[in-house]
Image 1 (cartoon, rainbow, N blue to C red):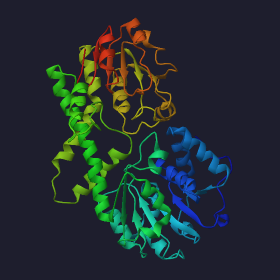
Image 2 (image 1 turned 90 degrees about the vertical axis):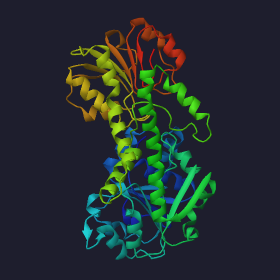
Image 3 (image 1 turned 120 degrees about the horizontal axis):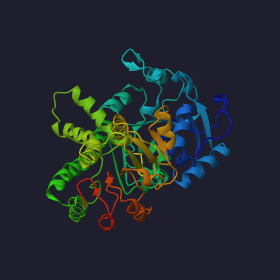
Image 4 (image 1 turned 30 degrees about the vertical axis):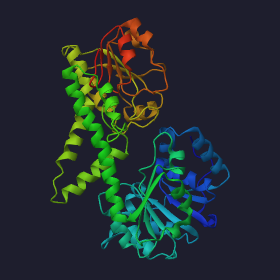
Length: 446
């Protein structure tokens, strides 16, 4: 997925009656695509280098890739360079609304101007009509968006957390969100953002309240999901001791409607951007309060430790004699099918393996460019084009992420009888039974 070849448009030639979106993240790109699909023109202000990185490393579904390129070619999405000063952005008085993705705003915009961030002061001093809605999205410490809304000297300010966005199917999950949350500065004012009505109407569940409440709810939802992951990972260690398959236990737990099936899979933990960012923001919030939150502290500790667990299983299997070995690693991204490795277990695993001078043969086509850029001078890092290329030369196989739709090459593993260390629990019970050699997963083994 790529940007168009033409240079960013001249702001003075921006289309009339358009939406202004500010950001370079998946959320911002998806929003721009969806807004055009709903019949709007969009001016997307972004750091062009960061935007290109997102487009290259994130695996967008085919529909969104096609629409993004189509809308660029039609100039329905007009790319603009991110201005150094927010005042340059707010000189556009023809925008039907401004949608700002808070985490994508440049640092120069955040400088304090008295008690306000610089961009808020510049918005207040601009010629943008006070009736033009402003929408915030993003993750930050609790109360930030409510405070920003209060500082904005305009009535129609809103906060939309992207709790509905599903990685790998971003476009359809925004068009028909499972849960639409929206905070509003002025109560009962959603009619002022008519452009959002189709999304709200299509939501399976929707809830609109004041911004502080929606911020708090966003953090609580994400923290609950992180807690479920860490809960299962904690129990996976007990399952190892008891000789129980945690995958089967999770299936049984999911039968209880009070629990449900989501986020019950034990593995190397959670990564990506959203959950780690949420936990980090919550920790910052708690540092400034007198409220103890030992549960979330434990969640973070478990998640960090879980990312090294599969290495310890490998070390124990060889009784510590692992120097100068070779291993194959399947998958590197935080989620199968993604090109992003942020907060993935691949990073602690590679550091630990390289500390023992272990050559790592990595099969991770989507994440290859990101890993290559992160570790450009590492001779122990070698990429392979096929999962089985280096199995015959490997002393062990690690599985970090494997698509559920892709068949695991069990016969190829059995030909070389290589021990398998499955950090994702990607192998089904019958596949584990079919392995000739050793298998160790997270809370399950052969």
